[in-house]
Length: 244
Image 1 (tube, rainbow, N blue to C red):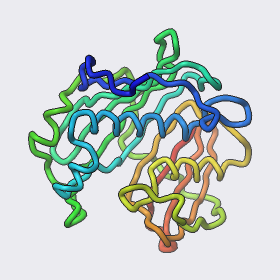
Image 2 (image 1 turned 90 degrees about the horizontal axis):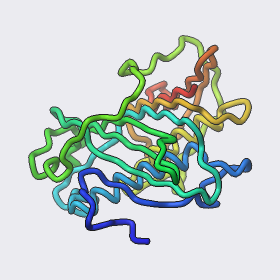
Image 3 (image 1 turned 45 degrees about the vertical axis):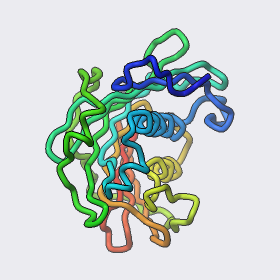
Image 4 (image 1 turned 120 degrees about the vertical axis):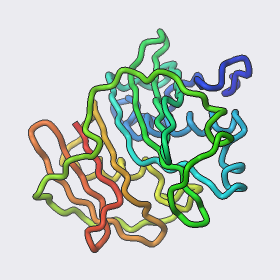
């Protein structure tokens, strides 16, 4: 089945799939990183279908960089289950864009949904820049999904327990020459003392780690949430992950 249905309205992009063996954990359920990767793939597919994908952005020396995730998962789909993954933009303002994602089961019921915030970057300077109409008009905008209210930034507890440092190797790097966004969540999951399947996830991305960096994780567990910070040796933060 083709990923891109040319008959669909590409401003609300959706593709059918099935839960692959490579996407499940030992319980046979789709993992949190697999859900995040499916969302990331979906926005990439949409941009490519609209003609404003990675090659075009690189040519004009621009990039969209993810700055925040808020993900709600009602249930994790099982191996070989039919699913659909979708995305659409909800707002463009100043230097940023807001985008929703969703995952439906074979009956069309929502099993996961997410809101995200992105910054538009000038690759020659590394600084935020205001996108023009050619960068945003193809996406259009739609009404956002119903998501729980949240504070914009994750509150970091005062006391955290340090973990083992993580060296950034080639397998963590994506096409932007940075650590892939999903890898930060995987690092946070590895800090948990026991396996868990979070139902709510928030991530603040502060700056990008690159090949050769060393990431120092630290964890704090509260009654209703776990917070993992991922920082450098000087305690300058790469990302903050909240799991609940």
